[in-house]
Length: 357
View 1 (tube, rainbow, N blue to C red):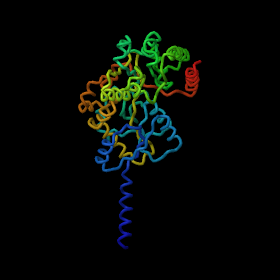
View 2 (view 1 turned 90 degrees about the horizontal axis):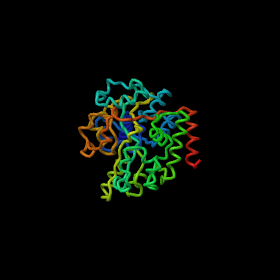
View 3 (view 1 turned 60 degrees about the vertical axis):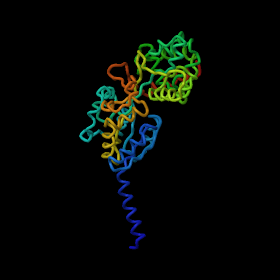
View 4 (view 1 turned 180 degrees about the vertical axis):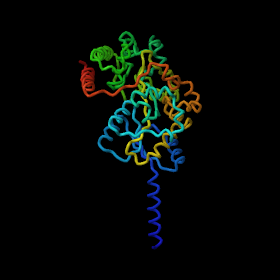
């Protein structure tokens, strides 16, 4: 065999061995920093390959269409339940997860309705749906004391003082849940009377809002174009930091509402047909280490289910009462998946709301 052929054979053999030690994950956009990914690769002497999605429905649809080759996905709690019903997950081997002890028991309890016994899912990223606001402008408008209540976006008497300066998420589940909680109802209620009442609350408030906005509310809040945004806690953290860095002449803040908030728990799960469940367990254990987990909160401002991460938080993170929340001490609820009939009814109501009927 000549040297060229031998070299090619050795390269092929080395490439095959390397390819065998690859963990394939299907993850949320911007959920894992490049530095964290690199450290994991070094720790396991393997390669991490990621594909990305921006919505649970997108991930579920891709798997339902027969996508193969992924070891892990990162579903929000209700989507864990969907994957379990479809038989797509394998149980976690806790003997391979010594860092499981680092998890905050409160988040495990919140996951229980979706993953009984916490057998299939390890919490990794947590966010609240709440109100971010320009504290300076709300004080001038005389409504700063309403920031701890959903009244800030639903009460016409309050909204009249900040008309045109409010945006809400273009999400039927999130907005209906907020309206239900404002009325003292269960955020997961599918009672037709509750939905009718919540829809009426939204209709009465809608004329005072600037827009339904999922895409640009961070920027609009940061530059001062809007004063109140219904959004996600990690997005509002980013807006707050951007405003500080730009030395804006106002203060941005965000906080939970007294009537309750939707809490979304994203989870690390291993697919039943995962090619490398051994590497998947190594990844989960790696991310349950306090230092590694802390990077999630330090970089994107997400609430952290790993109690051991707190020792590695930056000072501004430790001072953030949303990131440091105790799940057992607030009115937090995870959204449940809807059955076909309820989903159809909600779509009908939402269409009527959006077109002004």
